[in-house]
Image 1 (cartoon, helix red, strand yellow):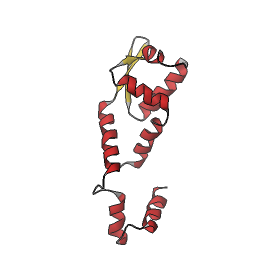
Image 2: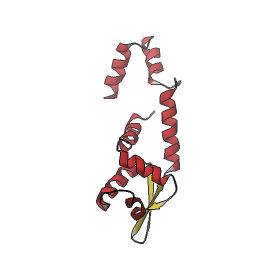
Image 3: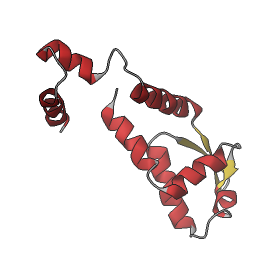
Image 4: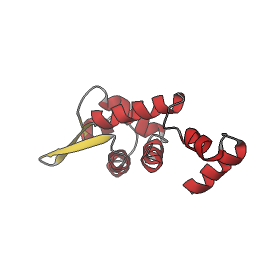
Length: 119
């Protein structure tokens, strides 16, 4: 699992307005002006939210004239679904299994080492 990418995605999802934007885009491509109609904030604020979602790869944009049209990046959304699935299951490539191979057991001490290695 790419922990940096996963953290970036979860940070993007850490704001309720951005989650709402994803919900709006689940209905299909939307113009920025149409997305803005759902919220009580300015266009620059929407631009910021869209930038965060695009940096996480969850949203893609295309420009038509002066307008930006946004849609979900379905491939990245599928990856998000797979990440959540991995976190809910005891997968073979789980870092815990790697620690079992190194230390013979997945103890609290091992987990502390993993946390230190990730920092």
